[in-house]
Length: 316
Ligand SMILES: NC(=O)c1ccc[n+]([C@@H]2O[C@H](COP(=O)([O-])OP(=O)(O)OC[C@H]3O[C@@H](n4cnc5c(N)ncnc54)[C@H](O)[C@@H]3O)[C@@H](O)[C@H]2O)c1
Image 1 (cartoon, protein in one colour):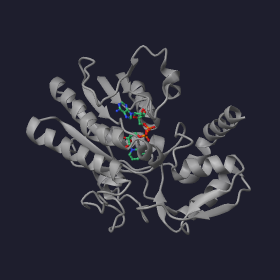
Image 2: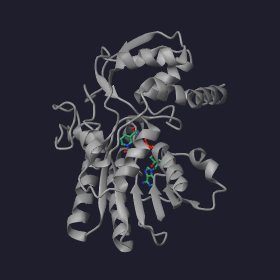
Image 3: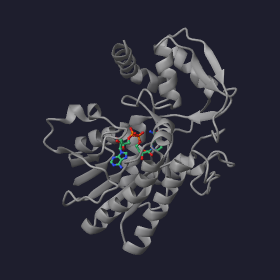
């Protein structure tokens, strides 16, 4: 297949490009490098089936015949979407529309990378796909949450009214090599602090929960959904739930760090619990994650160590 991956120079997008190339497809990666990096795809520079196009998907574009569009382009971490608030709303709206128009033109399949943030600060736990969410539509995080909810609505509308063959994956917290070190997410924060000899920052009392999916599990789930016939949103994530404090302890253990834990106030609208119900993905796709947090952090250690060292070298 000729596959287009938007946001392909980002963390998840670059791993998706790797997996699609490994399956024998040709891949065009479209990315404006807003939050991604050429470093993430540097290893593909001499791959003849891979092409990088510097492109903002919020502007119309067309790179020719495409069989599958994977639309991942969007700032994704709190740090990034708060800094690029308008660009985030545009990526979810205009960007998604341009990608759907392309899929319509070439009769290509389309997969939207959506998010667990569609559930907001959930009142139902764990979150099933049937839960409609509890989102503050005007709070600071709404630029991301509502952009993705709009993107889901747009995707379903192109399916219903324009006959585009669509899929929607609701991705839950994913980590692994190439995760940006300064993205403000729990794992990158803790790994950076633990390996840099700083205190680990825990917001609130650390009793809020998160679940963490290793990147190879997430990509396997996305690809399983992509080849299925399931049009409705599908959760892909790891249901093992950790309090933030437990997670901090696992990071200290895996890194062998002697850092302490420092407490700071909770940011606005920070979800108290976040954990996917993946029974649908298990039943429908025969997919479930295989890699637990300790193992995944162990496999990410070399990457984070190198990233911390190069950050410290460039700061000095
Ligand atoms: N990593 C996670 O835990 C997670 C969780 C839920 C959802 N997601 C979704 O997965 C996708 C990828 O996230 P990620 O973690 O790899 O983030 P990332 O920031 O590493 O990657 C996003 C990529 O999109 C690119 N991009 C942003 N706006 C663009 C635009 N207008 N035109 C072209 N490219 C643009 C960025 O430059 C970057 O390379 C996002 O859509 C995100 O919402 C990720």
